[in-house]
Image 1 (cartoon, helix red, strand yellow):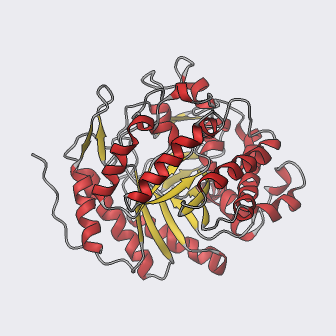
Image 2: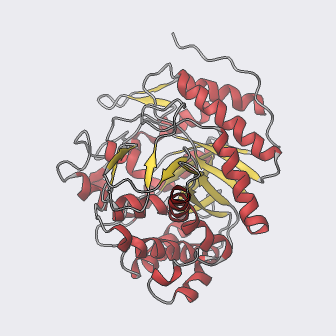
Image 3: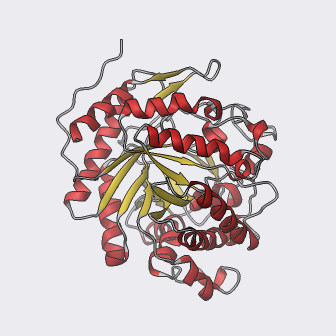
Length: 438
């Protein structure tokens, strides 16, 4: 029997607050034979790249089972569903027909479609090290907007360009598997340029309500020692400000712009195209200190010794099954800090991802995690931060990138043998919370 943790009543969010859940194409769709390959197909085919040796060729098979998933969304009672369009699928015959049907089904169910235009599954013929990929992305965006723009509620240009740069191109633990370290900086710049060109393409197509989904989290120095504080400031620059400063204030942090390729000043005018809202993916803060001269394991990653910082454990905190610390109050800190840093330049904020990995269908730990983070979000709203929505990651247990199927972030359990979906205790808890909010 599934029980649901009883919590004190949740504070009410403002009228019109948007509640949703998120997924991505490569992680749930499957049907790899019905699209062109992406860099992730090449990456997962290489032995040793994915911890359990799996691929996303089938995943949750949402390509064939999306009516079932839309029914789950309707039963949950969310306002919106954030999903991504697979660029390789859009490039394939009939690829947009699939998304056309999905968008129609969502609209019929009263669920607003929120489309992410790039969520890491780059076509194999393209390369973010090449400037032209930004223009090719704008062309892709125009094609999608022409077909779906009359029904899509919100657009997200890119998902987590920081992680795609760091994990895929600097450290080599995600696709395309390059270990370029700081030579990966052009990847960051070209993604940001692609974002600006995509904003222009969406506006030209007559659509609006455009944002981006950047991952952010507070960076805490390991101590008050100058070397630890300096290392933490550098980490914060790379993982936070490198991707928010150009978008929101039209310039790179000091010392970064001269490392970027091309006519950076001209590109920044494109990168800083006004957006309607700013999406934040939040999972945990990071404790950072001075380098210790040895490679360390953290959160499933091997971080090389040559980095000018080390990531340290946050002690005395519970951790998820992924080993990530559970620190809800850091979400309040992040949002109030963002509002203080950017002031009037910060548009309304949406939390475009927040979630956790736990095993089991009676997932009381996930309920406690979501309860704590939603309350922390409300405290930020009370403090004056203009937050307009919250999306849980994720609707379904899915293919968790280099972890394969070992991590379960879903409100709904997926049996990867039978593909049967089973709502978890957290699904029922969130459904009841949303009813109470209304």
